[in-house]
Image (cartoon, rainbow, N blue to C red; front, top):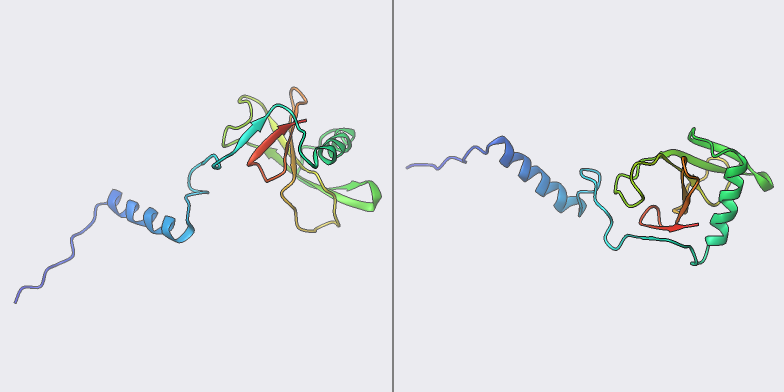
Length: 141
């Protein structure tokens, strides 16, 4: 009696199987490739709720000289706020060719978990963008 053998897959075929399995387990390829979030948008003004909070945070960060080293910084009211350092604009939503840095909007106790609210500053022009949903949408302040 003859027993059939499994065919050997080439390396590209094996990679395709691994990627398909990863996709089926995680639901996306985020982290493996740069993907612009579905429905992401960039707006030329900020009129949504929390824009005033973002402007206030921007003014405080500007007063600190927009630090470029990630970490915790003292904030008014005895709290702290965090900057994550360089924002690389990997999805290409903001104007290309600029150097950006990202800063949290809302202060908290030192070491507390970060939320999704960020401002992103173009270091050469000073233009600031507010993202209320962790870089899915950007509103110019």
